[in-house]
Length: 603
Image (cartoon, rainbow, N blue to C red; front, side, top):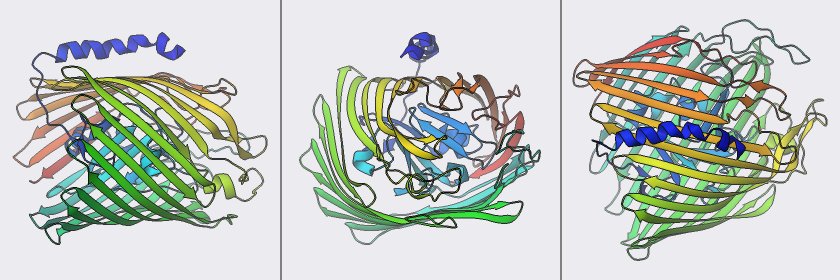
């Protein structure tokens, strides 16, 4: 934890802000979350470390796209390979970019070949709410949830229109309409975005050198549908669809791609009795990419996942909630590459018990996964919470998780410089966490954790394949505070991270060692003025720790003016001081840029 000791001074601003905020702080309603336990609970009630981004917070954020928004959440680090639509890798609590599970309205959405979710293609205008759960969740969701879970809920609010544009010839439009009643409701939303972009990558040399000094554009069209209907007093059916498609330009071979991201799901919810709720969920997700080089077909990769889940919540008295579930998932890969295997099934059963005592709370869970590729795998977790003072709560938890090798890892054919390794073992992890949080008008958190990962999968350049290394260890310390004082609203988050390969003692690549996020906004009549500042320490770009990227600080400003009850205009200035920095070697990031929008938001 050397990095934490050396940089403990970064916690001072959080403590100062906490002291200033305690006077005159405003009471806020507690958001309800469902991702941490698969059951509804408020943020104060949950034993997990959770962040919630509401539609209002998304509107007020200076973020231009989803990865940038998530990159400002405590515990989340982002590495980007260019501007809009370019690959963005998220590292949740220092784990790998494919160690975070992404759900859209409860359904997995990811590529089975890369193991990642193309978050850069999911439009912010289609999103109602985001829940970020830090810490392992394999006991509830199976493979991939080593660092945590990000769940995206598609939009279901009333009528809205948004028109705008700005730098890099970027233009955006979105609109939607929804109605909700006692017996049901629906919403429909559509969006479009086009941008000429900027040069995604600087020239490089070597056998895979790139020299394409051009603007790399991006186009995206999206639609989302949500609806629910009360069939009887105890039975409800609901469904959702999110689909985005477009074109993305970048540098290299290939240098262009057409993409489709889609999530489709139907839920049937039954209140079988006063103490028994049952839900059957059926869904399908699609990740489809067709790559081209200078307009000529190069490769294609399509992942289809079919999912069925049956969850039962049993209320065993006022203090006990027992959750039992079964899940089946079939994953298929259809690609121009001839994979040695292109399909696998996963069957799972899970159990969770929540005890809400008068003083302490206790939660435990177990899950058994039976995967066609690597056999049976058992995970478990336990968490405890105790109020140590009025409005102050101590939490402690332990959890295991695992990551299944991807189809690329296992089955990719020999193409000369890379070949899959069918002898890989799944990655396994253990996470210990201790937290202290203050609840009420002023919210603050202090959390320390240690994650140990066995059989970490890494690329072996000399052998041209991937292999398991013995272990990696991650130490982290997170602090955050948020409050409102009069016309001021603000938050400050600090993360200190030490993530190392135990075999070499090298730092894991592309993770910043220190991160500070500060946001402030002030209301002045019809005006709202705000700013966001992010500062990150250095990081290494490679596993050998030979290429180091420097730290940076970036300031973004925004202003909003209320024209009428439902109309406002918004403007923002990103990277005010035109800071030149990289979070992935040779890949450029956005310079100083300006955008403006006209927004209608109905009831």
